[in-house]
Length: 148
Image (cartoon, rainbow, N blue to C red):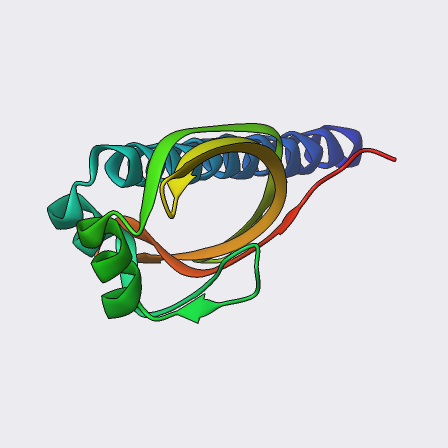
């Protein structure tokens, strides 16, 4: 009887672990889908979509070190001060901590800044949290990447 009970307990623990892994995988997919939607909205200059995808307390640090709030970042998009043409993330890693996600990776960027087209790669760190069943970007930090 004891042998049988141990197997049942082990099966229960393993099943719970698999459910947790599936849930984590689903959450990771949600986070990446939200990131993709945000990048598309930046490229499409869809301020309405960005308003939903960005947290009201956004801290957005550009590669040159300037920092913008949500209102300032939306103004940048509206004015085309930075005109995002393409953003292609790669080597992305998502780490989940409850309703918070930390996403790191590289992204190949194409944009127009002050009338000049620029193509470069960045290393980024972003923090998002789940609010009202949607993931919202809370913080973004990026630096130019150069493989040495």
